[in-house]
Length: 180
Image 1 (tube, helix red, strand yellow):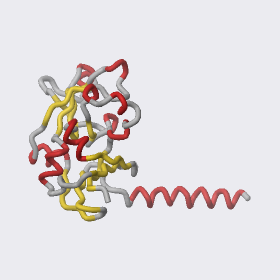
Image 2 (cartoon, helix red, strand yellow):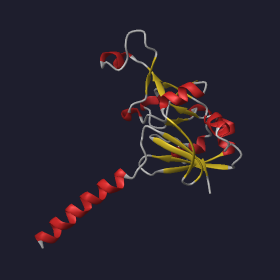
Image 3 (tube, one colour):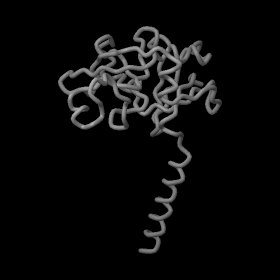
Image 4 (cartoon, one colour):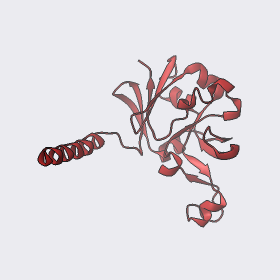
């Protein structure tokens, strides 16, 4: 029995490694026309160069005491338009951990979410060496849900969205595509 348990543990461990090795690169955002048909890829720097970054100061559904954070990133609708997929009625936002959120074009039009790639430096960031003196924003880290985090204006969302639509706040975004 011990051999079987040990064998299963080894197989399970190796299986996890293989599955993770096949996952997308978490530092690259893929834009797909349909599942598996990539039309563009972006690293954070590419988004910074290709799009106008928009600011968004907001709390999230998980903020302590309504504390706000200032984020920057391109508008989701600009990314969709530039890559020729803006005409879809619904989109899938895929996270590195295989989580998928469905978001309608009407939600995107109504609330203008950004794909955040930066957040404003705070004093704790300077103390921790994440921001230099005079630096205003820093790249989102894994701890922040980055490098790509879909951010919405919490105060503008209908009350029914909290907690019912918390799934629209997607962190570790790795792909965006029209829903099939």
